[in-house]
Length: 424
RNA sequence: GGGUCGGUGCCCGAGUGGCCAAAGGGAGUUGACUGUAAAUCAACCGGCACAGCCUACGGAGGUUCGAAUCCUUCCCGGCCCA
Image (cartoon, rainbow, N blue to C red; front, side, top):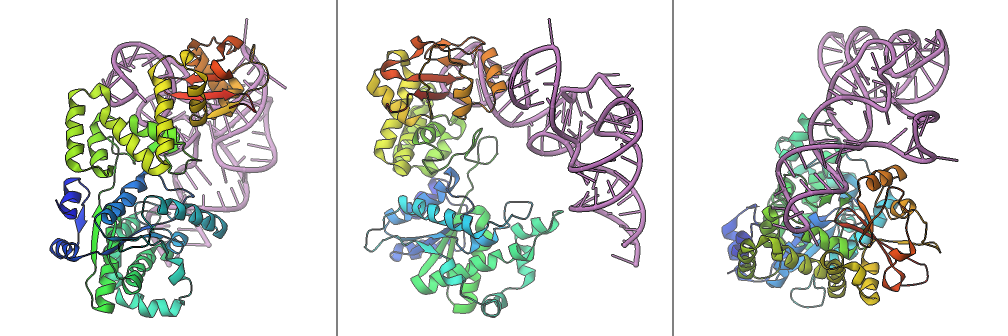
């Protein structure tokens, strides 16, 4: 199966400009492709994985990926997919975000010198020095406002009550110019992105055609949505981030393990780098005994290893086995040490006997307030080890597990490990 | 610039002097049932030193025993007129 057919079979192709030309071009030899990521936060989240892995698939098939960090476009903000104007980030925040995101963009791709070497680029490098007049003459001249306001992302904003600023209106020109620059400077002939980027991407192919007289190509992948149609990658606690400091490898893995059956097939096909036949076999097996969650576990392990490394993935799996598998009160100190390193943790004061859990749970971020802890206690939702705590929330020294760890559990799936400072 | 309608808790949205921490819905949390799933049912859903107190209905003043509700003023948004 060739690359394009594989992408299609995985449900990763939403639209392409000229599929025959793309097919032929891919068969002809290595192609340069790029996907842009704007530094709107200091970490990417799981929603960005589709795009990152999209590039990885091309690289594995022998092509050259150019992950682009939007140092320039991030200053403007993409008008697409939102009903209101963005608040502009200040330059310190932007610089910080950019640095963090660059590191993440590099993680899933191969940067070793060679024919399919990845190259990280930043559109600020070729945008910052351009003057307003140059831009208007070299880029703006090639677009009519008529076409620009016809694009979905712009039209929906024009029709919204808040309107759209001139700044955000210009976004697509910047992105078009990026494509043109990469085409000329690096021979990047293909731009990929999520389906909501279609308008911006095609603006680039048009600019290349008008100004250079060359054909550039475009391909988009569907936006990933949850089963209820809401935005992918959001949980109760917010987004699931790729940065281990924001979302621990354990939490990251749990996100996938807890995916529901309805969407796991879509997720596995779109995200896993395993051959499609193997994925289909796994999904068939999963359908036989969904309660075993083998598809969820397989995808969770694969993605955690890709994003956080094999060791972190193994530890996250071991921690989950203790917390959801057997009896944590029987786990030995070595295993609990792994749990303690993976699950959110909180420092214990000297003495446990008679200590109330309130501050521990609030401190760990599991509960927002003392009142909430009281409510949880009243609902019998808090445990230490296996013991359901009384309404007073008092702990006993007998609640300590092997190695002096205190395992607090809120509800069925949230855990906090209490550790004495200086140990484990 | 003139007129007019509006700004309520995470979101939508009721409330037009005391019975208001504020109806209802959504989101969320927990419990039951399960498979670390979905659906369903139930409870909870501002904070705290928790039978009480504090903070809160755009901001600041005021009237009143008492204000989300009335008055003044300022800020912000929609619509209409210029």
